Image (cartoon, rainbow, N blue to C red; front, side, top):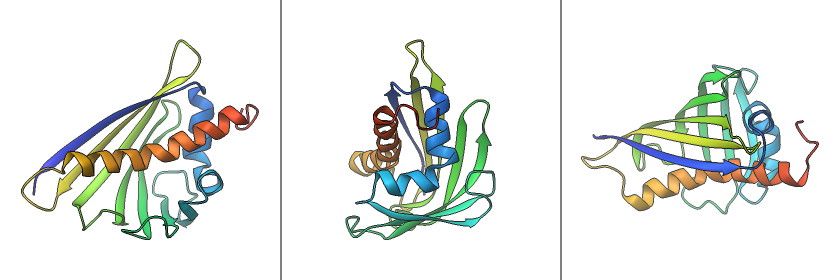
Length: 162
């Protein structure tokens, strides 16, 4: 077992507060609407879906061949600083590619009026080596796909989550 970290960034023209509300406060409602071909539904199993301790199950469509769902628990929800951290409990690449992993996303306002989204994935590998570059990239892109889909929705709907 080896510990690894995957870092990524995404720049949005949408203000941090709007992207935060849409992605992390109401994402359980919005994500299935903006990604209907990939995520069929998000079930809230514990909590309110946005607060610390909330457990959500992301149910995937048949487009995702390797797994049908992923279940996450929110462990940090810093509304003021726009930082969320969650730990994956089951499903997805857990038990297949990694023993455990957590994801932290922060949104920071930019001088242009948009925001910078930074993501950090920390994981424990199953074997004695880090994830391959392809597997690490796939994890990162899968998570950022949700933020990018919400970002596109907010650009097309400028009064949503304002």
